[in-house]
Image 1: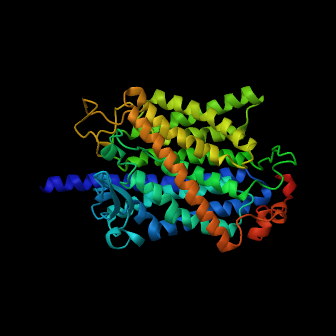
Image 2 (image 1 turned 90 degrees about the vertical axis):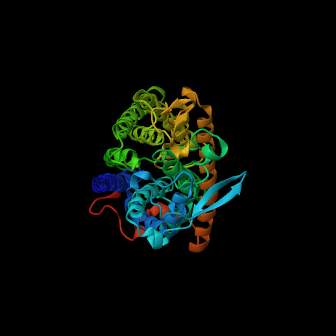
Image 3 (image 1 turned 120 degrees about the vertical axis):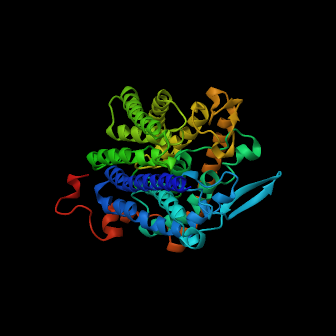
Length: 471
């Protein structure tokens, strides 16, 4: 009994340390986001863009600490799916508000661990909070790119709190907190229910959908379109900054995806990390070649967005697909991001950094790719389905359309539709409320012309040089 206790303690300790270290890597990705977004915008707005990426960490965390984590994860142990076993099952997170429909209880939101107090004051719960928090921070920072160069800072400040406290946790509960989308397998017979290993939808599609509704509500930047509605190029001020930021993000993504195992003891983490690497490379490769062929020259910003698109796309299926499939998923993502960037620009939606296309379009592709390419070699018993056998095969895990289970693809399509709908509707409502509170979301034409560094932050981001030299 003493030996068994020591082994269990070592098992959970390894998983705690692994999860924390990966969480630290994901936190450092905030630096990469700040550099990418700032590099792809103009020199007169660098302080403003950097300040959004900096403070979204503290603002979003505050909302997530107060109620976001409780709403998202506070009922995980009460769900038939259960809270994560690698962290001990966290039985204290046992409060779930559910709706009883069709003889099944469908989880809607958690009710325990507000302020990490009471049941939330638990070692396993707090490790999970840290990891989930840095994921939420990624979602919250994505709109700062899609809405850059015309978003009032006070509006950003309030809206980011809404993301951490309400918007992100809602869909997050349904997918990762034991809620109804994950329960589609048990309750409705849709394969393993909606599955998203590391967040193509929970993190990236949510952020992309929020960037989309935000960009629509704010409208395009002053001077982006001529009198006939034709888009005009607004050049980034620092491609080197964007490239370095992209590599920081790619590095942190190993923590993002492999860390979502919540277990250093999981033998699949090497496959996950390799799939992540392969998909990032093929995404960059495809975006570069596609842009070169169809637009005459390779574009460095598209190379960066191609790599990020590949990373977003592999985030959901990274644990469930073979390396060859990961490479193919990245090739599709790299082409998709280029097509998507120019599509949104043509229809009048101004996205300075391509956030909607990188995270939104490829967030959809990521969960769909899981529903297509998952080969059944991993995920036995996922979401409580098929503990003994699945599709008549012992040990078979999450299985996509190409390997015999079309219901998994249906579950992923449902999840993507729900994710977009939730974030567009709730994001629109919260941004409208924010505008009412602060007296408007969009910076004036005068402020946009002068630059938000001077008008919003009170000082230029670059001093001692003329802005024209870095525009």
